[in-house]
Image (cartoon, rainbow over all chains, first blue to last red; front, side, top):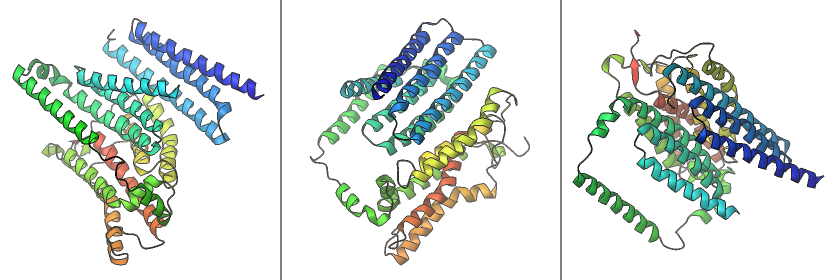
Length: 97
Length: 313
């Protein structure tokens, strides 16, 4: 059982790191602000989510696990809000490419 | 493996520090400074200074970063003119030499420290039980070095008075910051309704666990101030006029309670800010509870800036 959980951690954290890498490449390579925001929020949502899911088997207590999940949910909320606000500013004032 | 990560982290921080100085735009430099503060938080975590890490994230990266972004936004209209006035070659050489001299003096001071460095840590850990506080940082800040914490709170109050003193005469006593015009059904208003309940619980939690675990009033107060600012930025509540008596009383309540307990200590325990035997923990709690609203208000009001709207507007 523990071997399965260890593999789960490795696979999920590596997948999370892949999304962060992809998000960073997207941020650097995409042509305009809207697509760059798209790349960035993917890294936050999926990358951090997979890292948190991967770390869950390693926590000592239920409350520590809940805190990890809460951190992910809060990052989801702040990422979604910030990208909406940034995108709206670009749409109103014109997007600096 | 951890060593490799630490070296990478240090290199990243140094690179970011250089970039923050070299960046031409004030706004970009402020963003770089925030990222620098967040990376520095990771360094403190690696050094097992969780309390310092929390403070760095909340105040160094978050609050100072927000202050700098506000300053950069205000300077934006004059920035191009300021950049056009390029100082002469002689001025730049003098500035460079002065910077190098300061850096060299600091480096010599650090390298000349006696080895091992003089420390009071063994004495602190031998006497920490007297305070009944389990978090050594809190014990040092509120028992052994309470004077520093008191002065820190008073300095913050003075800083706020300094910010307020920039108000134009007609706005004196009025509301700080600009009137926010935000879509009441928009994204910001939605978050300002959803996030504060979570943030208030998190801030109170970090404040409360500060006695026995990493955390404390400064970090908790920063989170509460952030929630307050969010509600005001979303236009759901307006900033209070600074002439309000309740506001001014709350602003001085923390330091006054602290000084009062200090005077009681001078009379009953023989020294200013000494706690009578057996009363250390309850008195520390009273000070923390009194400082919490004061710090929340000071940090929030400092970000709002000087009063800009009189009673009429």
